[in-house]
Image 1 (cartoon, rainbow, N blue to C red):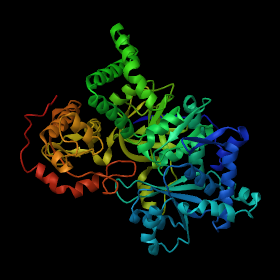
Image 2 (image 1 turned 180 degrees about the vertical axis):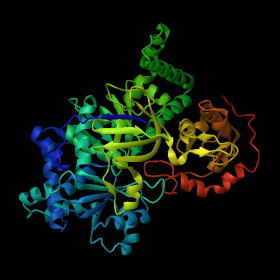
Image 3 (image 1 turned 60 degrees about the horizontal axis):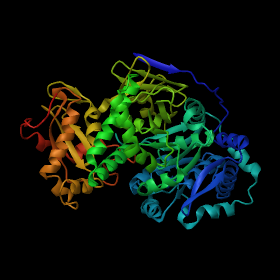
Image 4 (image 1 turned 30 degrees about the horizontal axis):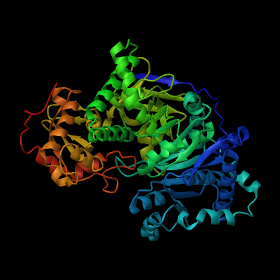
Length: 608
């Protein structure tokens, strides 16, 4: 059993709660700009002191509305400044937020509110209100609903004017480190969502230690970030607290269709994203270059960037000709991509799925170090992360201070330490099953190298065992295939079958550009695309590349392109865009059976 454990570098304070992060920031730098709020074509500054004043005013409103310390309050909203304002106001009022993904269905909203025992709910839009109204009759505990689109936050502030500062200070300081800070529900990728009880110490200790471990990223003067992934997810939620603690100026952009203009005007120094975002940036740039007749130049520039980065990471000498090509492409290609992201991005923190060597090396040559990390809702987000001073592309980094990670005999990653959750809400059976002593069993499989860098190789429950007894980790095949611009999602199948196959969906955003670049009708329907010879050949090329990473017995022999799109709304993806494998296997059982009804033809499959 391989184990790495790093002592905390900040002394623990069992009395501290999340509100202390803001209190300490205001005491240290009251006039530091902590947020940029969209205003016209620019951003309005909000200082630490101004933010705290707004937080207290809103907390008074919640108190006046009858919210008591310990009460659960649901919150459905996009990633905006108001999200963090409400988050801290509920902490100051002593309440416990139950964040709900703004894309959740009415049934999912009902489950989170019912299971948590929430007595109130805040909604951002009329659409969210309508979704809540669908199930309101089934939520007898909900006595208050605040609609932000109807001015609810301003009304709460007005109604709380008679509540004293002393009352808010009393409420703010009731909770200690061991108390529940929030109740975050798992994405439901492996079944019904479970409520994770995350304590104040989980957030406070992880935030304080991570700030020191990532000091080059978050404690550098002038550090700033633009949040665009959902703050209802633990990943962005943790970062939103970390930025307050570290004094990072934070902006928000809930609509990724407007992300590039927002990046250009806000000019962040680091980003938080999931691999799919980096894939989209790369694929969009490639297809744009192809459309302009510069596809060959872009691909050459990309390969030069990757080769250059690999040599740098390995500490090898870079040939003179490569240096010259790199310098030329930096002027022609790389600088334009840097500019598109605001021109100041130095680091990008990536999580939720493997990024892959290719993209990691590509962005590294752009001057952007992607710090891949690993964690789950149950670990308050990160357990490991690559550091500015200790980074290795293709891994999810070393263990964070205050955290221990071990690899069990069966390859499972297990975690203990300051970030591990307390329990599953009202589910002692699931809690007991999830732990081996004080070690949380993640269900993921991975390996450590000699330097303590962790690599994720798959999910324990997702390992496919073929009829021939070969163990296959789907992620090794799926991740590189998904990087292809026209592929939306892919699921590898073959459990107890004679060979490995794949279900593939197409990306409706990238497909029109690719079709146009390849002399096909840009508006070709998905169903027609799925049968098109050129499209199938492109998918085959992506599969051939992935097959080179595995043995013949693990390679994909057949694939089916589906005429459907897998989305969160269809029930096939989680809010963080992870596939719900069990749902897909059930819904497409017929398509899978059809694959195996005819023997595999591997004549056109490139195998290692």
